[in-house]
Image (cartoon, rainbow, N blue to C red; front, side):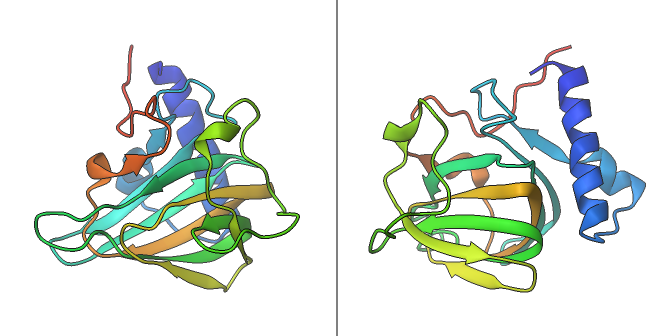
Length: 180
């Protein structure tokens, strides 16, 4: 992803954080990560986030999803030091359509990105609106998508090792590659 594109999506994330009344200082604004997952289709598949803290025991992040943007299906596998990352999502703004393992929801509210449907295998729907939360346990396949207004999610978890996440779509590169 080109640096100017990366910076443009950082600004879009800041707008969403403001709508959610999330206050960020300048250092935090500058450290927002923009993930296009190597697919170069960020409006459809992507995620913008800020990590507040990530220690050996806990992690806290804010996630911003653009309108109808999808974070692709993945899981947090067993690691050398634990059973895998456990995370709780708390919706702060907008609507989040979260899909996890379990019984398939009849007539789900959201659909996977067009053309990438084969990379989405779990359809047990959890709908989060502001003030609602859901805990995703280690090694659980999940994906999520924002509603029409976008969404902001606070994530509270055990230690985050994003580079170890396992994506259903093997084309995905979790860590962004920035080009000038």
